[in-house]
Length: 354
Image (cartoon, rainbow, N blue to C red; front, side, top):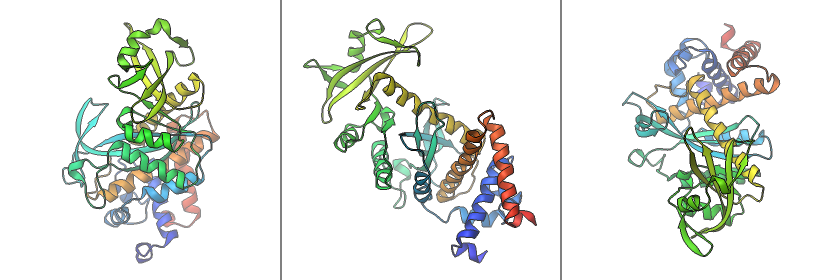
């Protein structure tokens, strides 16, 4: 054990691989159950001790994943609520859950992944996003826009060339739209309908523009099932942008959605970029339902973040099997990935072979 605590890379790697195996095949998927199954080779208490060694485990993992990432992708950014009932867990606060349509006790995690329409998302990281009341010196409070901008800078510093950045309106503060614009980083961002913009020399809300350009004045894009019209506008403190008015057919009438865009591309590419971001939600469902993202009961916030990071490691192994065997369901690919990893660990004479 002492070799692992002192930072023996091979020892830590074996433990991490065992933990990932537990996430894929353990029924309960919490640290104690994974350790008790023998997957890690250590006791539950020691396994939890290893989980909390790194304060920000996503940083090294994201850099490594970027080095192996496919090129020509957009960066998708989102917030993921992870519900926890245990009030003893560090960092727990009331966070809004879109699936529950209400605040829940838990953590928000900042999810970042590379996306492209028609391709499986390539998840990069899940990092802590504490509420203002739960901030600390190690985990400071950041606005969504500030957190997104830090991720963009880190990815560019790593040398990865982003096709663009795609994000929802909670990240779309003018300060960060302007930063992306100034650094020639194209973006597609959902706009609030009450946002004031300049069009034709007049100030108008986007909702009012939608009333002026109803679905009858928009073009139907069968590929997406949406009506869309692109308009040139100017956004104060940002500059000239495109706004796409998108009409989503409903059972009765249409629902208006709007996107800001600086992509030098046709309307269909802008729509495809936005649609690709939605695929991150599929990733979040897999992490929660199949890999136990919300099952970590460790009190330590650092352990919660390491557990989340290892769910991404597990998902990448499953993603590889989906790439090799497209006919497999995600569940079948998970079983195959677990079988392969277990075989690898046994071959390496890990504690699993005992």
